[in-house]
Length: 212
Ligand SMILES: [Mg+2]
Image (tube, rainbow, N blue to C red; front, side):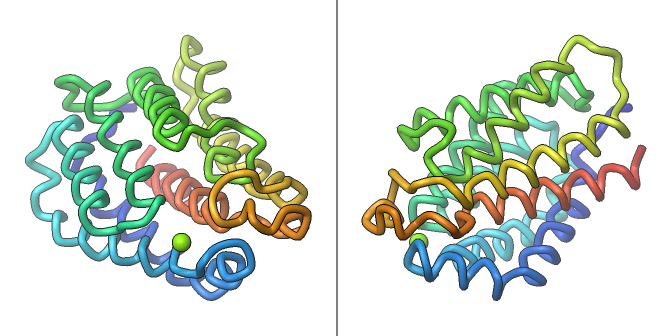
């Protein structure tokens, strides 16, 4: 199975829908642990991405990721804007001149992008952040990188892994960002960034399954 950039508008619409549906829940989480602006920032980024819809089908993946990263970087703001921007710009650098993506080429780019986010955020697994969703998915892709494409199974495993990663942040002590000021009071609540990353990943896997 080979994915082309003409899928991007459908993926962005699916992400936008799930963020809208869960906006209230995520904002409540973010008001407990952060400053409550994560969903608004993300929605500003998504609204800007929707304006790129007509460009995507003409682009190769490196161009599509670059444009996505730069758009998020310049519109989202906040810590998450720079992390989301870093993720997609790194995806762009790894995608070279690929007109299509398959399991292996996507996985290679994703793994590199997660490393770039770790470096940019000076963070690792277990610190109650979006990385607690991104890193387990990266490890899953690494495990499957040289196996024959079995995207239907892999997409289901990605969704489960992202959901487990999001849930795992509930019992973690926050050591990064504003949530770290709360110390032990951060325990018992899911991290808002982990939640939106899980929602995004699950929206993507669900949408991709329609195109297999
Ligand atoms: Mg914030």
